[in-house]
Length: 636
Image 1 (cartoon, rainbow, N blue to C red):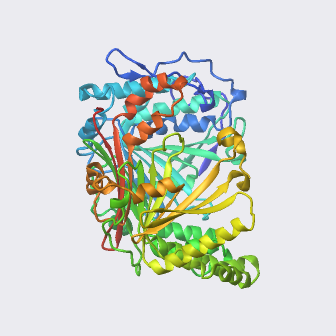
Image 2: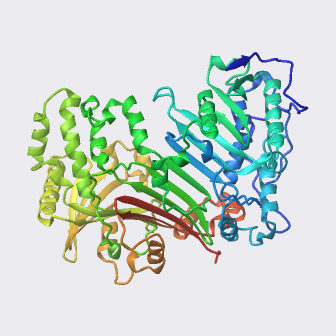
Image 3: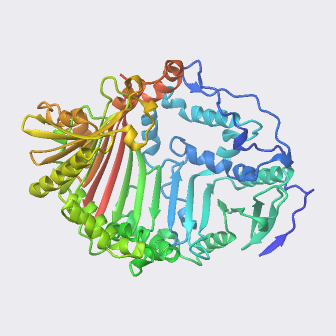
């Protein structure tokens, strides 16, 4: 590789303006709110540009922003931009080495049916009901957004769209050492001459700002290296390297990545697309996607193990307190992860597939035993399976690590367990499937009501351990420990126990709540009833589970059932459900009056279409699956 010394007076090839692109710090802290145009489509107003900063006052990262501004805008547009190209295959993956640790790409070309489905999805939002001129609206939107940056002279429609082919990607490659991976961004180029012209312009702007790039040659390609600070050289700190290859713009933190990309393209090295691991991970995925990501977790573990010996199974004692998580999670760490994002008429769908390592024994998917006991008014509900087993594993590993971490013995731990009346694992091992429930705040309250409901695998053990915890709390209260009290009440056949702790006992300032300056009380209530354990912030939360009328559970809610089924339910390996409409309505109730006008005019119309979010985990053979779906609908 040859390095040419920068010429402070010479400009890049061709005639290019030297206006300085502004830094993000120059963007107003409170940009003006969008205003509706004549057709009702909201377009942010353009602010008058301010004079560019002088070269001496540029911040160190300004030209990182300038160089990658194009990539950022393209990536932001990836979810909505519609262009005429409809390439069937990715252009960027042919440049990525087979040993890539991570590879993610966005498809601006919207392959297959994605152009039509993105248009249908956007039609639920203000200004996009007429899809016939969607491309014009989108181009204008990006132009106006760029126009709000003071001093900016770039536009999306004139400076970016003309040379972009349709695929952008980012890859992480192994570096010379595990602590120095190589990051490379790729932008497929449709018009080589126009792309070269934009690069020339960026080089000229950098020179005028006192951050003169260094020109070099790597494998016959011209590389521009941009130093991290004005007046410095690339060797003085971190630098960014930019090369325009035939059909591909490459941006990286290490010129070795440019060589690796060239080797793949020339056929001297294997591409990621030809890798058997990648092909296995992506098998069965739809080819028409907005974006995709591949993570070689097996390779990443090797990289992490080289940096953190405790992450390697052979050396768990190197960091005793870190190893418990590693030991419990190791059996569930997949060999790879492959994910996609695609649009449907009224949905955005994200899919993840993760093959488990040999010897794994994941629990089979099953229907929820809890949703029929969860209030149908829940704003959010998250359910996981076999929580007790996972917690017991973690406790066991922590117990084993404590003596090594402290340099002592397990004698003190044994004393604690003797006082509690059993091994620490036994206080959680009786939990089965568990769900976290978030409900709207009760009348007169501002914070949401939060509760946990779980199945019980060993009722006798659960009763014993809960009784022991209650006795300890009662002993603390009877001993005069300030601010702590224990009470019980009955709800039918169920006994609700409440542990109350005044904020003064928790060193919480009394000014945060409480009538007349009285310090607020934190109340934790629980009960064991009909083979279920219920825990909540106060007895009213527990009663909301116990006194749930028939037919008013979350499981009986049509919207929930439909959402779960659309993502692969009702049998799952765990799931999450968010009622986005109810969450919005709850949040609107506490919006300050001073902010309500702006919210109603400029924010609420774009939130109204969001209906619900569901995430479902499943199992296909030895491969775990996750599907997340955001559903929108026309505002009522």
